[in-house]
Image (cartoon, rainbow, N blue to C red; front, side):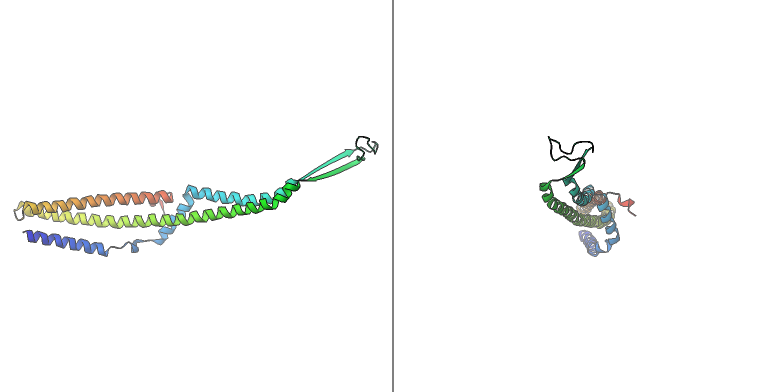
Length: 226
């Protein structure tokens, strides 16, 4: 009886291992879905939005710095009616009519080219920061997606193993009730059932965590992705 039970257990293990060996997540990878998840992550991640706005702000600063050349010039004028004497004893340089004056801030004028160059550098840095974050985000989305696909495969295996062990345990219980096997043999089948059931629960939790992490990263529920 023990030999028969051991044979059945070995057969079950053989089929379980064989089933596991045949499983591969590579055919389950859907790159069209992965591309959608990457696009959604770029669209919904708050930090990515911040970097996008930062780059746009830095770009706007370039023409603003260029146009600010006009800020360096200050114009003024003085008007003296024609009925006034041409020579003013207080200000002998005053003459009748309009007098125009233009002032230039030389120090600010010399700094202006460097300020424009700095604005361009700031924009370039903002672009590079966004590109760097995008590359990191793409890698993270891929990793979370692969973890999610892996968790699905592991859950399938654990569920199948639990179902198989349940069938063996029920069969051994039937034989035990007919006194065809010993209590120790029956308990071994129950132990295998408990272990496989625990593994299935663990696989379920792993699946739920992987799903939640992927959804958090892309910003929407997987069921809402079209």
